[in-house]
Length: 217
Image (cartoon, rainbow, N blue to C red; front, side, top):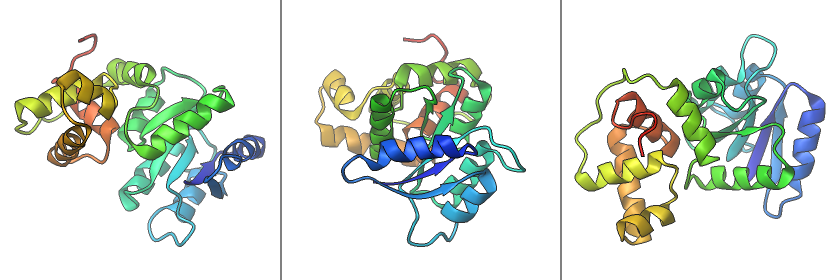
């Protein structure tokens, strides 16, 4: 996995680089100290050093924060996944970052082992990051005023409900008595119908449409 780090604190970048670069098969291919530098380096027509995943601080000084940088990078480089770094777990800025295209978030105080696992999961794209925390942020700040969901099959609606609970493909397969490849096919079709880039965006669409409501099981 090719990883980039965006944070205005050089000590934070140094610490993250040390933790991530020690993982076999991972390489830290770039750094940036603010949102504008991140967009210039990793978005649009970025060259050979384009990362697979970016760890992006939400709050940075200057004219562009991590939310706007996430929006621009995910729009111009859809294959790049963004995992935002935040100090506060339940924060409207975290929701804004998820809505801007971030795959998930991780707290800055997260121990190294959990950070590595979060990056690993974000890189695979299979499940939401920290499911209960991510769902809690979406439940807290999503406003059910978005467009209605497109026409979905009964099975696709079941899959979407389970995605909203933070289930992985394997867990969905077990609950619905399906093969793992069948679940992956349903998820891919669901994302295409919703017009979203990943599972996190699908869950946001589910809440904003009113299909899933806060507190629902």
